[in-house]
Image 1 (cartoon, rainbow, N blue to C red):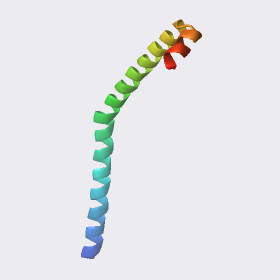
Image 2: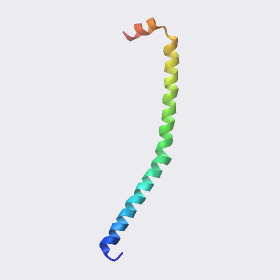
Image 3: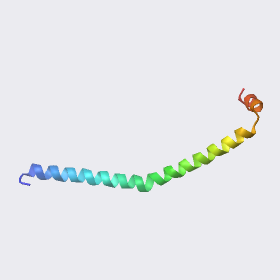
Length: 66
């Protein structure tokens, strides 16, 4: 690394790579678990809805919508 321009370019690229790595790890550690928990809740709600709608007769379900 002979010139200052090359040094600054290398430092800048390394800094961007470090920031990208920290961002990726932060998302994996903090955001992904909450998203997975939300997905589990949505799946359970969907199961309950399917069970409820299967128990309701088609005529009764139609009457409720209108």
